[in-house]
Amino acid sequence: MLKIGITGGIGSGKTTVCRVFEILGIPVFNADVIAKSIMVTDAFLISSIKREFGEEAYLPNNELNRSYLANKVFNNQEELKKLNSLVHPVTIKAFIDWSLQQKSAYVIKEAAILFESGSYRDCDFVIVVTSPEEIRIKRVKNREGVSEENVRSRMSKQMPEKEKTELADFIIINDDKTAIIPQVLKLNEYFNSISRTTPS
Ligand code: ATP
Image (cartoon, rainbow, N blue to C red; front, side, top):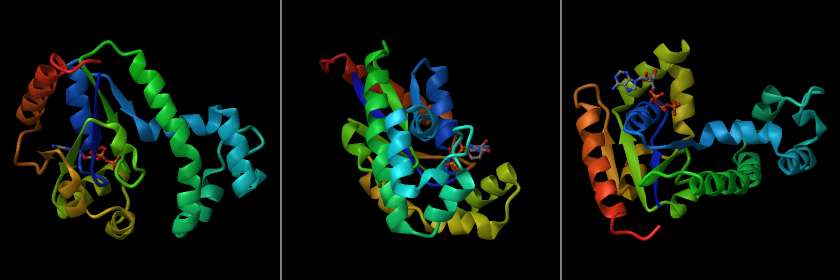
C-alpha cells in the first residue's frame, strides 16, 4: 500500500487538505495527534520520558505536565530533539500498525515535522502544502486568538517553507486564491492509478 506524507508549516492548511482526502475515503493518520495520545498511553514511552525529563513530566493523574515539558523544550533545541527521539519511534510503529489495517489504495500520514523527524523516508511520496507567510499568520491568529509575534516565533522554529518545497514530490498551493479540491482530485487520481500497478 502506498504511503503518502503530508506536511507544511504552521497554518499552511495540512489538516484542511487532509480533510478533502478523507472525504474521498482516504484514511489519514495525524502523527501529531497520535503522538500526543501515545505520550499518555504507552507505558514504555511514559517511563522513558520520566527518566529523561523527571517525574514532574507527568501529573499525579498521569496526564502530561504540558507546561513543565514545554518550558524544558521550547527554547532548547537539544531537549526538544531528545523528546522527539523518544516519541518518534513509537509514533512510527503506530503508523505502520495502523496502515496494515487499512484497506484503501493508499494512506496518508499528516505530520508537521515530517522532514525534520526523518519519517518522510517511510513515505513513497511527500506532499507539501504551501501558503504565503502573511496568510498563514492571519489564519493562526484567527484560529487561536494569539498575537502576530506569537505566530512568528513559532514559525521561526520550523524548517523554512522553501526548504520543504525543495524536498517535496508534490506541492498543494493553499493561498486563498487557488482552489484545493482540483489539486487533491488530481493527486488522488494519480495515487490510485499507480497503486494499481504497485504491489502492496
Ligand atoms: P497547524 O500546523 O498550525 O495545525 P495546518 O497546516 O494543519 O495548521 P489548518 O489547520 O488546515 O492548517 O489551517 C489553519 C487555519 O486556516 C484553520 O483554521 C483553517 O480552517 C484555515 N484555513 C486553511 N485553509 C483554508 C482555506 N483554503 N480557506 C479558508 N480557511 C482556511
